[in-house]
Image (cartoon, rainbow, N blue to C red):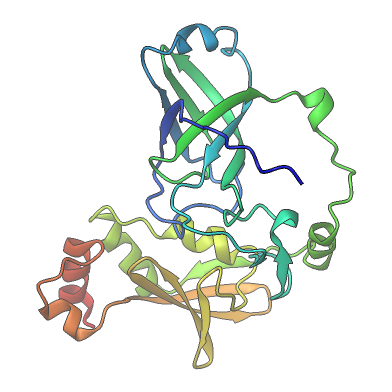
Amino acid sequence: MANPISLKLEPIGHISTPFISKSDAPHQPGSGGAEGMVTLLTGQNFEQALEDLDGMDKIWLVYWFDRNPNWKPKVLVPRGPRQKRGVFATRSPYRPNPIGISLVDLVSVDGLTLYVRNVDLLDGTPILDIKPYLPAVEAYPDANAGWISDAEKAHHNPEYRVSYSELAAKQLIFLEGYGVELKNRIERVLIHDPSPHPYKRIEPKGDGFVQAIRGWRVEFRVDGSDVTAVAVRSGYDEQSFVSAVELSDDSAQRAFRAAFGS
């Protein structure tokens, strides 16, 4: 067997998005409407490479999962039963070569900057390549996707309805005043499947459940297809607040604690 060849990859640019951590980002592109900005490197003749791209509705972004230090042959996925799947049968970032692809909406091109929508990449992700989406040859909605098709059939139908208690609604509005937006993340996860799952950071708690979102915990109940967010709590303990360590969303955490208690 021949020795494996060495490949050299260099980013052509980076993307700016609202997503700082993995828990912030959606599991797939194409939903949520989040916007991003791809900035390509100067001095590489990329201005010419971008010619004729403007006017296309969708493009593929090929990128590097730069925050994954290792790969896993089997991974736990967010859809379907709690069962590990072979990584090559998933879109998991834990790959031997951590290369990802995302189909995004192209909004506009301005010099070396591409404005895109419906992104799922983390802020600062290195971009390796850009390719046009060809609907005539890349859209096969009737193709069988194996275990993914089975999982979608099993959970076909009912999307869950998410509502908020008076307290939870008040707390979310309070946090928005400090630049902490949790509602989109709550609904993006719970509207599809509020069942406990480590990937979605949902655990049972008493007669309900709790969803972890960065340094926050959202307590909720499920009644049939109705999900009610009951309250928002800090994910930090008492000692964290009296220590000198800066917390995630530090000013919001301390103001929230003063307003609503521990």
